[in-house]
Amino acid sequence: MNGPWIFALLPALALTASVGPGMALAVADGPGEGVYLSAGFTPDPQSVELAFEARLDATAEISPDCHGYISGSTPDVAVYYNAGSFPLILSASSHEDMTLVVNAPDGAWYCDDDSGSGLNPSIRFGEPQSGNYDIWVGRLLGPGPATARLSISELYSE
Ligand SMILES: [Ca+2]
Image (cartoon, rainbow, N blue to C red; front, top):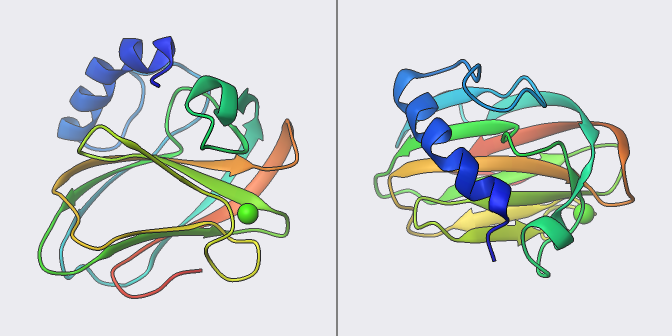
């Protein structure tokens, strides 16, 4: 299920997570952002405003279960999460129909289209693992410029 570019990128992502923000090691297809969060973080939610060019078809590149066009091989936001007893809820909002694509610490892909409010994507990890969550927001309608607010929370979904 993994696209070839994912295999090529994994070592760079792991290194990036350990050194914090700065995606210079990764493919230059977006600014990327590294975030470290520990269970019980405040403020909650953590919001990240994203502006990106939707280019890669997640259905073709990642999994038939995934939808939307993502920016590229570099995640929009890479969250290193130190888990506790809370759930981890990743969601996004936009003026248009968006999706979420997440590669979780277990190595699996988690994708969603409309599980949040309205057409917002939302993915809830009930018993999240500690580790790196690579997160992309996808534009459902196709390639093109997009803006979205990504929300990282233990309490709320967009
Ligand atoms: Ca959606």
